Length: 399
Image (tube, rainbow, N blue to C red; front, side, top):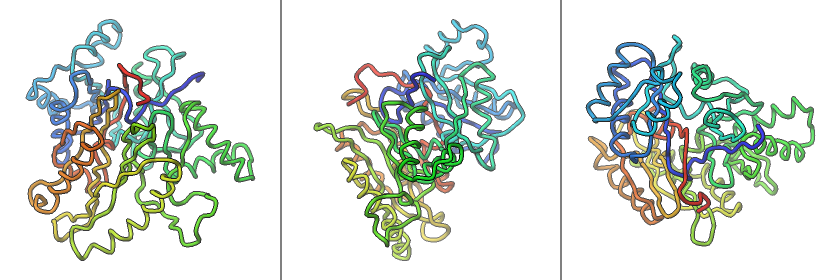
């Protein structure tokens, strides 16, 4: 790749958004509900690409919701060998259904298996799906990018780095990379290049991330388990969550050019859970200090800790930060999960409103998405189950 540029997770209009629907069963009804909600609330210029398991019940479930929402759609394989007609369909239809030609099933977590980069020198749309060195354990999700290449939809390329899409956040001129995958990448590079010196290894690791994802991107590792100068002896070494997109949101630049981040602040809904929330605060707070030292403007937003049966059952966090974001000039929009529904309304609706108002104060138009409890109980938000596949900008993205 001569001039790769990783697709931003915030900047530019959302031109194409990927959603994966595995073999349809009743427990996946919340994914169908989300699809309907996104059809209603995403901009008219956003094409939804639906990668679906190829059987009759799954196709029927998808077509039923598209017809109910009056969404124009087409099947990719009807136009795969007619590129001009395919381009026209993509310009004028809301959804493109891509049927998996193989028997393997996959998960709904389509954010993680690859990172999207644009490459002008490549053919087709100039889009390449970068796949990590290590496999996606326990799923067939690492087959998705290769299937897209087989279908002549996107190119795919393996690179000798470790990453998940959810543990990276690409902004305008930098990329945040979660500590776990950054450290795993260091191990890969140390072994391949036989590097013993840690300062050199840090430099070479950042060089290789920039080489594959954008030579002008500043590489910023994020987390507690990192080699830092003057690190306190009692500093936490564990990470708050497996992926940084569960508690960090990109929010664009302020009037002075400083980049703004929203970082979740754990809040217990029940007195008996206050110790758990405090422990998570102690894990996140050092990361906030390090981000501030990097020059970021940090806004804390409430991240409630609740339970599966409101006052009993397993605990889990409400991941408001795991949102869809679009910044294009002065136009700023966010699609935010909500949690103040049903039995949780009394405890959580106030936090829906507070998070909405925080985004408003940062200049964003906010679209509140459906009840996300079914997703976060599996430790995920809307970004986890979608993937930006294309962005365009009618303004400079560096705003």
